[in-house]
Image 1 (cartoon, chains in turn orange, green):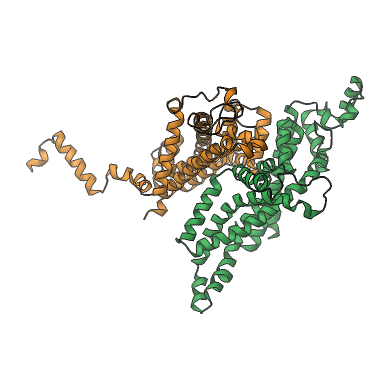
Image 2 (cartoon, rainbow over the protein chains, first blue to last red; image 1 turned 135 degrees about the vertical axis):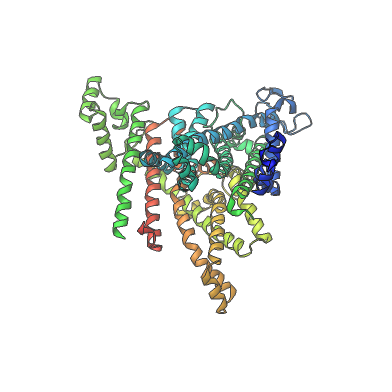
Length: 309
Length: 319
């Protein structure tokens, strides 16, 4: 009896907390890492992640990895094949290809990641709120997304390029505007199923505001598929940037990007005789996108609860 | 069933109206005199300013915006899509001139990729977890990761520039007109496009086939002592093919987008190449109308696919 009346020390309270957690099987450290652990055991995804991070690191710290300026014209060294001095040779006006590829990574990755995050910001916030709320707003945005998604994507992108003009910022805006549809659809679908759960009804009964319920309490439960989608969208936007720049309609040609380096390959003479001008950049894009896709697939396997074994 | 089709068709109309309105808005807002895409340019050159003004009145260009839109829409419905800013040729004629090339390329790629995709996907599903399966999975990953024009460029270097087995580009050289003359030109663009599309069909075919192989009727067929190949290909594949066929059908209009870059690589004179050329030269009316046509094609295709799926699976129309 005396134990009950004695006030508990702080240490006792902490012990009690730990004991209670054990009783209910709650261990924050372990459960938070479950998806991560699963990802770590996926060998392809780990290799992909390391490769992606290595490329990002190289482009951010590009000056550490090359002494050449990617823009510097050197007319005495035009179209030189790979050598000790220029690891990947030089292009039509003597610029170092290796420097252009690692500096170009900055812009290509910026376009890919920036557009994916922009599309996620728009798609997820609209999808989460209108999906939870339903009614008028929901059907309006559903219609808008249907209209955007019924265009073949490259046609809509090029149409907007014609209207808005060519610049780096415009390209990111255009990709965001044309690419938010799939993230919106997915978030909305998640919301439609999650909003029927009991905890949502409980929160509603407590009188919590709508944005608070949907963004703070429901959205975190849909985060897994959203992350997967953002990763795969990044890969897709990098591919699109490459395609558009290859056509000469993406990022303005004076800025080096992986796609812009490939633009010269439209010239058959260069294509046939000077492989080092275009092939390394093509291989870089392909490997980078392949690596992102491995990471995305690994994330999907590790966050999808139906696949937990 | 009929009511379902009718309802589905009517639901297309507001969509088409909104899209046509957006396209018209785009046409009005982009630079370029509206007269110039309603009247052939050679007539404009011979006109005095007051005549031009009279012409605007008679053409209804000074009407309120909404009336102008309705006039434009009724023109479009009657097949009058305006004129190209650059050449003054009717847009309808330009597009009709280019359409066969694009259709030829996309249908060839569609057939090759469907056959290969279904074959690879089925093999992958039958030998799940084997080396074959892993090989095809990796092939699929590469197919969605490597930009199609890189494959195009590599094929161009190997087969056209170095081995000189195939022509570098174009569809028909002057003087050759028979259908078989452009077969060599078709091989590379169609092959590269098909290679990229095979990856998607293959992934889908694999999961569809796995789905079908897990069904009860497969076990029944096996227990009846039907030979294994017959169980797999006649009983299993036939059921798996329905969703695959739907997916493939849906790809046809999307191919208009898919051919844009490949047509550029191989200088294939189709809609995609026309589109890129006119984006570059900022020929707004033509760009807008091609975009409009491609959306309409996608909408019609999705309508037809709904029809086919509803016929194949009667549960759908109950919704």
